[in-house]
Length: 305
Image 1 (cartoon, rainbow, N blue to C red):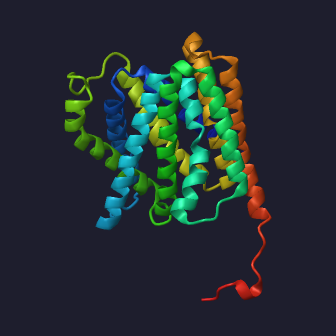
Image 2: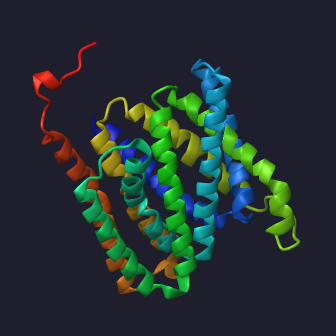
Image 3: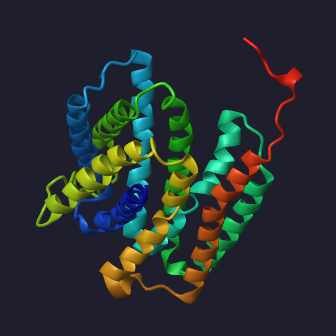
C-alpha cells in the first residue's frame, strides 16, 4: 500500500512538471499541443493493442469522445499559453481554481443540489485570487488565461465523469487524444492565417525539444494516465483526489527549484496561493464528511425494481 501511495505522489509530481516542460519547448502552444496529442495518441494506441482492449465504439459515442477531445485541446493550449504569458507559479495558482469551477459546473450540468460548503470554499478561493492578482499585477493576463484553462478542465472532468461509466478508461482517453489532435489539425488553416502574425505554422522542433516533448507525451501523459488508472483500482477516490490536489504545490516547488529567480514571487502571491490551496485541499475532506452524514433514505423511499 505504501508503494501505491508513493507512486501516486510521483504521478502527481509529473503532472506538476508539465507547465515547466511547456515553457522549455520552443514551439508555440498550439503546435506544442498538436505534437503532444499526436504522440500520446500513438502511445495509447500501442497500450490498447498490448492490453487487448477493444477499439470499437458506436459512431455517436465516437463523436462525443472526439468532441470532448477538442475541449482537452483548448484546455492544454490555454494552459501552456498561461505559462508563457506569466510564470509557471502564477499559471499553477490560476489552475488551482479547478475545484471552484467544478463546484459551479456540476450543479448546472448534472442537476445536483448546490452544496453550501462549496459556495464558502469558492468565496475563499476568490479571496486568494484577489491576493495573487494584487501581488502580481504585471502577470495578470497569464493568471486570467490560467483561470480560463481551469474552467475548461473542469468542464472536461464533468463531461468525462459520465462518459467513463460507459467506456474503458484507456479506450476513452485514446479517442479523446485523437479528437484533440484532429481538432487542432482542422484549426491550423484559420490559426495560421489569423493568429501567427504572418509567421505561419511553427511545427519544427529544435535542440532539446524532442527530449522535452518525449517526456511530456510519453511520461507525463501516457505513463501517468495508465499508472493512475491502475492505482485507482486499489486506492480510494478520496485519497486519489486529495493527492491530485497537490499538483499546484509540487509544480510551484519544482518551478522555484529548476527555474530559479524568475519563479520567486512576492509575499502576497504566496499568501494568496496558500489561501487557494487550503480551499482546494479541504474540499475533499468536507465532501467525504458530507457523504458520511447525509441522511439515509427511509425504507418507504427506496425504489424497488
